[in-house]
Image: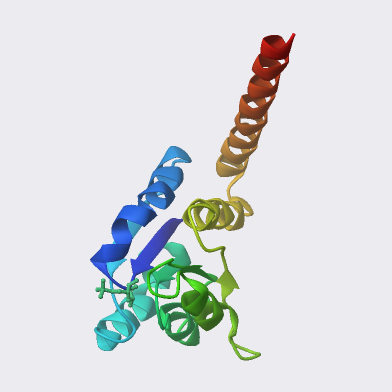
Amino acid sequence: MKVALLMGSDSDLPRLEPCIAQLRELGIECEARVLSAHRTPADVIRFVEAAPGRGFGVILCAAGGAAHLAGVVTAHTDLPVLGIPMDNPPLGGLDALLSTVQMPGGVPVGTLGVGPGGPVNAALLAARILALGDAGLSKRLAAHRSAQTEKVLAKDRALQAKRG
Ligand code: RP5
């Protein structure tokens, strides 16, 4: 299945490139779109309603400021929706974090962290959701985790060698 990455503005795109790259590295097809809950509400709903029929299994929603995108999207679908709060000035993402995380009961949005970890973790969480029904992806995720572990252990070995 594919992942949709909706972003409220093209100004969000540079900070979302690592999310797209992570999905591609895991062999997951990602469609990235600029669609805004405030500026293009009808297009958001059109996209979301068509998403299951187009083979999307997870929808990622990145927005800053008064970040309503993930909430609006999840109100129109039963697909898993993950919100990525963007760290914009002047409030540094706290605004988007609170908008995204404080959903009323019955309208679930899984909220990622603010800052560079958020977009990458959104990709990895989406991959874990899709891997529940995809044995090949599950193996690729396990390999990714082992490689990450090995990278850190190599840094530890280098530090030990330097310090004698
Ligand atoms: C949000 O407002 C967008 O997701 C973006 O993070 C922020 C600013 O958008 P622009 O004014 O840069 O288009 O809706």
